[in-house]
Every structure is written in structure tokens, then in C-alpha cells.
Amino acid sequence: MTQQLTAAPPRIGRARAAIVRPWLLLAPALLVLAVLLLWPLVRVFLFSLQDYGLREITTGEPNWIGADNYAGILSTPELWTVVLPNTIGFAVLAVAGTVAFGTGVAVLLASLGTFWRTVTSSAIMAAWAMPAVTGTYVWVWIFDADRGVFNDVLMGLGLLDDPTNWFTNRWTFYAIVLLNVIHHGFPFVAVTVLAGLLGVPKEMLEAAEMDGAGAFRRFFSIIVPQLRQVFAVVIILSTIWDFKVFAQVYLMPGGAGSNRSVLNLGVWSYVESFGQNRYGFGSAIAVLLTALLLVITAVYVRTVLAEEER
Image 1 (tube, helix red, strand yellow):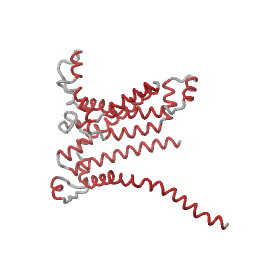
Image 2: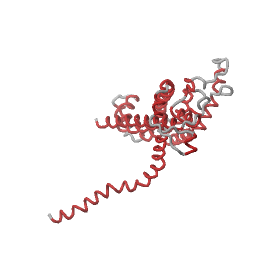
Image 3: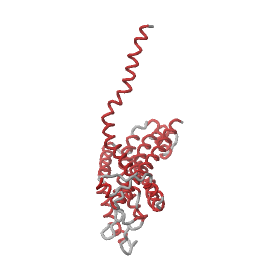
Image 4: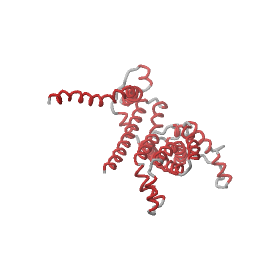
């Protein structure tokens, strides 16, 4: 009994060390993240509680107004009729299109041999490596009213009599942005889903095929359940990226604020901050966008975890 009592404290100490050691190893990275990410978020939130403009920047004196910026945002009709519909509607379509197209490309890549899979994967990754600014200007050139390839093709086919400016209309504007975002985002989804597809046991697919299951049945009954975690990751990341899309909207003609009908939350925050010098108001918009992203991500993660526990 005495030996057991004397042996217990070392075991407890090792158990505590096993718990503490991972946090000690993560501490430097967590400290860097806190400095680079957490503190700027805190600063933006503090700005959102002030009437912060050029005077406050010059004098350095805060002008606290509490939640007035948030009340002003929520009482702005433009938020409910333009900004939120543009932000949410575009994000839903962009996430669905990116995940669907990327998954289709992943299935195609999985059916190729090793050599052609490597070549094709390298080619599509070039689209992902392209900066968003460069890709946006390419799409602007394609749909340009005067020198755009798209107008030239339609006029050559006799479908248009005169060049059309596709950027003045809210729907065609976001259709071009949607093409841009899907083109830029699908390689990440394709490569991520491909990695999951290559890990699905071939025996299960072969057994299902022998039982008469078609390609669609095998995909939705076997592959999708096996890749639930993979799809959760790509959907969450795509949602975050597409909700806060900025460059692809801002760099389009009229997207910098001159065409108010195409504003989304990200561009509206920038325009109010740096265009109108209303930094507190713009910061409040950014905080609301961050809160919206956190809510959406939390709900989706909770749904996925709940389905796994069943």
C-alpha cells in the first residue's frame, strides 16, 4: 500500500505534463496569432464604438458614441435592400457553384492515370495561384463594352446589334463576379476533394458496382458519407471567402461605390471608411460581417458534429 501511495504522485505529474506540454508548444504560434489577428479585431471593435474620422485621427482623442454606429447601420434601408441581398445571395451561389464544380473536377481527376492527373492538377492550380486582382482584370477585359471578347462573339453570332455594358446591371455584374470567384476557387476544392476520393476504399465501390449501383448512387451513398469532413472543410472555407469577397467586386467597373446597387458588406465597409472618412461606421460594418461569418460557421460545424454523433 505504501509503495502504491508513493508511486501515485509521479503518475499525476506526468499526466499534468502531458496536458500542459502541447499548450507550451503551441504558445509561440498562439502569441503571434494574438498579436497579428486578435489585437486588430479588438481595435476594429473599439473603432466601431466611436465616431472616428479625420479629426480623431489628427488629435488622437476618442469620441465614444456607444452602439450608435450599429443602430445607424441597421436603420439604413440600403442594408436590407441592397447590401445584405448582394452579400448573402452571392455567397450562397458562389459556395454552391465552387463546391459543385470543384467536386466534378475532382471526380474527373480521380478517373485519370497518375501522369495525366499530375499534369491536369498542375494546370488547374495555376488558376488558384493567380492573384485575385489579376484574375479580375482578365474578366473585366473579357466583358469590356468596347473591346471585350464576349461582346465581339455575341455580335459576330448576330445575337447583339450593339455592344452592351454588362457592369451597369446588378444581375449581370454579379454573374461576372460569380464566374470570377468560381474560376479562382474551384482548384482548392478539386484538390482537397481529390485527396479524399483517393482514400475511399475501392472494395466498397467495387462491391456496390457488383450489386448494381450506378455511378450517381455510388457517389451519394458511399463517397459523400466518406468525405463528410472534407466537404465540411471546403464549404466552411468557401463560405468565409465568398462572404467577404472584396477585390472581385471592388475592381469591377462601378464596384468601388459609384454603382450603389452592387455594394456588398466588404465593399460597403471600405467605401464608408476610406471613401467617406467614416472609420467608425465602416468598422461597425466589418464587425457585423465578422459576426455573421462566425454564426454561419458555428451553425454549420454544430450541424456536422450532430450528424456524426447519430
